Length: 172
Image (cartoon, rainbow, N blue to C red):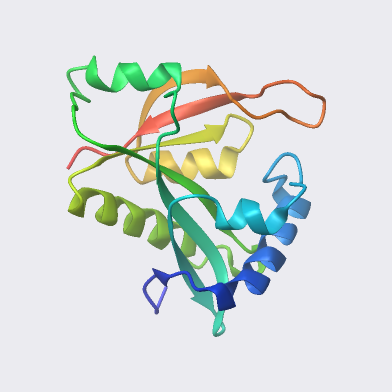
């Protein structure tokens, strides 16, 4: 990747919506197409984009864990590998348009989110649908540590709550 991730702007939304639609069509993320795709992309938290050919081709977000916190969040302070009492931020909405995959954009976005989190003195986690094998391979290759398996708060098209793998940030 030649251009580092940059903060998302409102001008990026059309390109990101195109990218999300393409990702949904090819990789099934998100598993259910949102009623309001713009609200899904915008989410809550801070976001950065990666560009390809002068256009936003992917994004990542950092957001505080929702309240009430998921049950698995209690494990972060329990393990000797993940002792943490400060702020916990969740890496989310990481996607890259299929036409720009394989260029290192997802890796760069993930690394950027981790640097931002660490610069704030926070601890990062992420959740991934356990059927999303390319994403799981990326996270594990980049050193993210499997924490636990849990049922997601969201539902799949069949109405069931999918299982997710929860990962903790790599060891510094």
